[in-house]
Image (tube, rainbow, N blue to C red; front, side):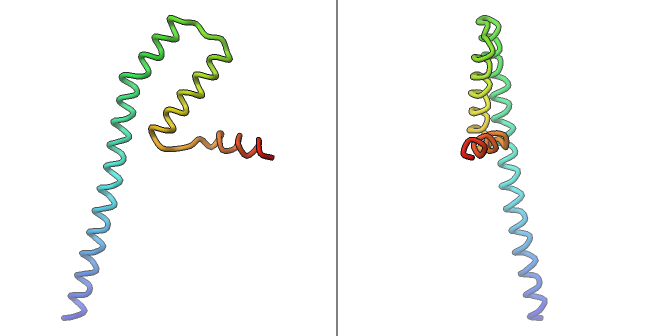
Length: 92
């Protein structure tokens, strides 16, 4: 009987751990989805309208791309592989 109780307790603990991890993962997905929706619905239309109203040269365009990438990286808490490679090549 003791082995059955230990097995049942182990299964319940594993199930609880799985549910907690899944809930955390789903919460992160929902948060990322909401952030992307906010950016797509509010920020990008403003930026596109500004770019149509004020033409930019290549240097300014690259600067804007870098800024937009930095914003996305901060919002989604990530880094770009190319940026890491760039930093490594700069150090060498």
